[in-house]
Image (cartoon, rainbow, N blue to C red; front, side, top):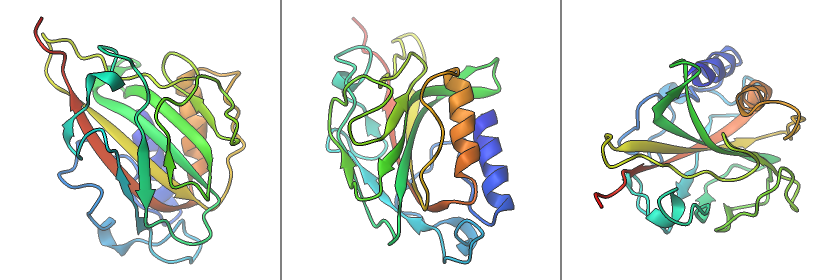
Length: 211
């Protein structure tokens, strides 16, 4: 949660919007940004609302086992639309709201991909492991340079996974190696401040079935 608060403060200080939703919104991908706030404090118009979706589950629905640690643990295919003109890159941050870490001041980073090319309109399923990807994007998770799906046990409550996509007017000079996942997440969020031109959110839930 500390990272969410950090990005909220930085973007709000620059005239942007709140990037750190702490509870899963009912319809996050379709709601307009609050207060008609301006884009990154640079006089470039309102923050656009992106539509982020996956063919594997509907927004707010159950994440299939294939995309969790109970199954294949492969990254889901994602698509997005409504990106404004002039976007240089995208950042995807996937986090589990129900798994506190550090201790209890943040939530679990399941996946983060940044410097996704501005021309991209989706990510394919089963992104390969590796800190630096062929298209120039970079990735990390709590366990390394790869997607890490949720792992909520049958004995625990349902976990809420939030996929947040940010459209930026810049590339981020943040390396994917040399720091802990938490430090890299913080560096990416700090570098994003003042550059967010759009945001889309997709949520999913997961709990292992009783054996």
